[in-house]
Image (cartoon, rainbow, N blue to C red):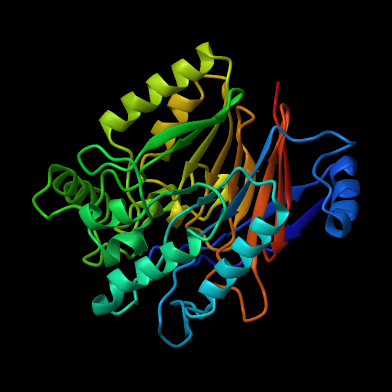
Length: 355
């Protein structure tokens, strides 16, 4: 059984590109699970208990400003988004089974008044800290519009080396989670003279002829990702990722890759992709350990399975929830699949691993 959303026009503004096509497949087992789980909090499928469970939310983009619209007119609820987060934390805590939660970036919005940037980030971080467990953050473009890396990363408690924001953790022996820094090579967040910023600006001049580097005008197909609100994974990070995946393979661990920027065109609009998503995925595909890639950034969400059987799930944004609605969820992790139980505007998704 499958559900199709008709592909809307391309959507992009402020680094928040929206889905152009979405297709979700649900097995009969999972449909039965949803029917029961929505009523009784079922924690597994066919009586199985998950190895672990964790919470997910993306693109809160809080700001203490009136509601607004994206460039193409999509409503954005800047003050309501923190209420979505509050309800998410309450539900996660009430479940008493979540080992940790993951925030997929863009904690505050780029329209946040700059004299409120620090206090707004601190306010949202305090809400996350009411969760009864660890919270793993990653940085998004809107985070970096508000604060430079040297101020942002300590607030988010991101383990860092020379300002970089990639790391991994293993909550159970069978699984490893890898958090990528999608703005490693970026024109935002680094000091202007930093080599990563210089490299990013040179790259954009070569790839995007527009004077406005956030405009995809006249860019064709996948070239439309070469926008300033996106970024790339640098050489050192790729070498680090290679070593992590090699170690996970030797340890017989399955891997979940997390990045603010999507890594597969099938799950995202072209304008939202990591600049060098193809280079990252070429590396990932050399190994069999990566089973799922999770991302944010593209507010309408999406799901795809790539040519090597890796699932890509882009999460729907908390920012675009009208008052009284939500977009967050939790994931149950099994040996052979992930089950994402979405709340309200976040689609529930079954991700069965390819042998």
